[in-house]
Image 1 (cartoon, helix red, strand yellow):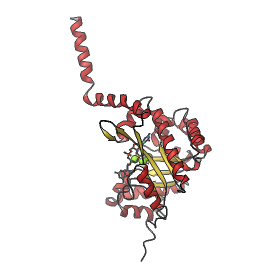
Image 2 (spheres, rainbow, N blue to C red):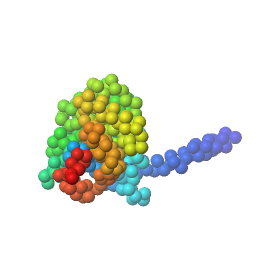
Image 3 (tube, rainbow, N blue to C red):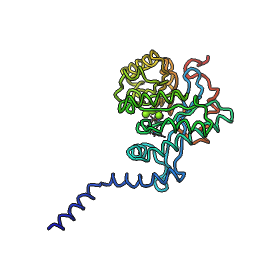
Image 4 (cartoon, rainbow, N blue to C red):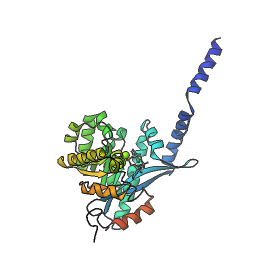
Length: 288
Ligand code: C2E
Ligand code: MG
Ligand code: MG
Ligand code: MG
């Protein structure tokens, strides 16, 4: 009886590892090798200045060129990595690769900065300051050409530590953006004191703008708030030009979205960057 019950216990346990979990486990098992083995890729999506349509900055977005599953979205593996120690080498790889790429572009005369997403766990990791400083030194990327995108959840989780880290990053000279702004529970009291440079309005408000007066009111309010606090504003997820033009009219500083460019591999992104280095205005310079 003992033995039988024991067996049932094992069976029940393995049944509880459902298909979903076992897929995630096998992905995780492959991720460490992927980071070492050159299976990760960075795609780059330009951010345009609303005032003149020039693209002076790109966001680096990671993908995994999986040997069996093809090109995987970060949504399938970054949250997994974030729950394990793998987030550290992932963040390290992304920072390094993005910095090297940006340096290479700058050497060709492109005046471009790169933004890197740093997950809450990495931001709250003690070694993040050293990692960023070392990356800048070793790649030769000027600090002002690196932007770190963080989410509100990192600040919510440990406000004191997040604050100290952000102060340290600012002292290095890198800029800080709050990503997906408005999507989480924002503590406006924190926002007032945090050393951040800009807010990225969450795509959910931006994509709803054209059909909803309420969403436009929220966006207008967030732009005013950012500017009152001395921060810049980026709209993410701009999928059509009409929305981009409206955002520019509302005073939004930068625009990012499929309307202008999808995230692209470096050899394609550079062509867009070159084309948009002297682009005409998004909203104001419509011409006769
Ligand atoms: P995010 O940082 O908010 O990045 C914006 C996401 O919106 C990207 O998805 C981008 O491809 C997508 N996007 C851009 N424009 C549009 C648009 O006009 N319409 C729509 N529908 N989507 C648009 P992606 O590349 O799948 O990345 C998803 C998330 O994964 C990112 O959201 C970020 O949170 C995370 N992520 C990506 N790369 C990294 C990374 O290197 N490290 C970390 N920690 N997280 C990353
Ligand atoms: Mg981002
Ligand atoms: Mg975002
Ligand atoms: Mg987002």
